Image (cartoon, rainbow, N blue to C red; front, top):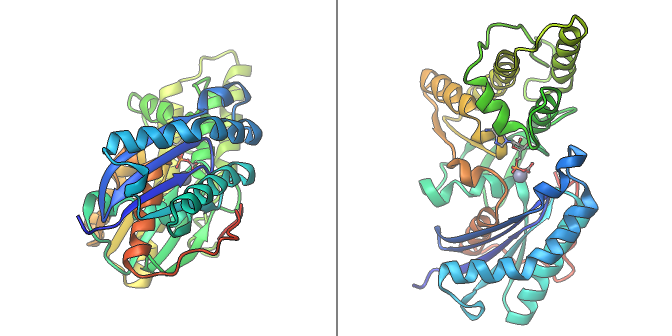
Length: 338
Ligand code: KG4
Ligand code: ZN
């Protein structure tokens, strides 16, 4: 094939993701995770994540190559997440990607993790409509973006002013005694609960609030207080009901603001990505509200919503094909990249 083969590195959090993409075809997506090592801390410990990336890096690259049936010599370009994320974790990926690019004498592309979460959708659903609105919801971010051109113009519209949506899921899961990371467990527990059983607050939905910003910290606190009051009264905590009511509060705000961003900007395409995009209720409510508003909704399959190397390779491939200049060899990591 004359399409470029791109090797992607993702190490912004606790997943070491190595992906291979040719053009917009996914060839392989190898993943190693240190999630179990963070469980007893209830959150990702940066130094543990960095050490785990270092140990997993080369074996995971070899696995990705073997799965794709290619060799290092076949690689045409290297892409790596340069930010945002945990500094030490990002540095391991950037250093590794530089080493491979240098040894192979191939161009290196430092990419934005959020844009990569959007780009991954092209592997399954073809070229993104431009402009699109993108909503990225994960353990580290909750952002609304206007995407006039994924390869060179991605504009932030709003973001969380406190906790990320996934962080709220993880903290509420902890309060409910569910394992870490809690998002998938809350999702599962909520299936047996009544979302209308408890009225939890919807943050930043007032008239005068920033229309595209999010706030989940008040919601998280409200859930914790509600559970504590139950426990103090010696009453059992209805885990499925709390999970369903909390989840409904999060996805109600997320979908309402995403649809509003589309409407305000005259955009009729929405992409939802990031780990929380795997949430079954978010997917259902977003489909419902987008259909009602005449918006075409695209969401990557759950496997590609969470952090992985294929998303980085997908964006790298986009940049190569758009003729964007590679990164300078002095590329660094930017933990707070916008
Ligand atoms: O994108 P991701 O893998 O990593 C970050 O960049 O943060 O997202 C992980 C987050 C975690 O907070 C996890 O609990 C959440 O995504 N998550 C979910 C679901 N699956 C993963 N949250 C709600 N429902 C889910 N089904
Ligand atoms: Zn992510």
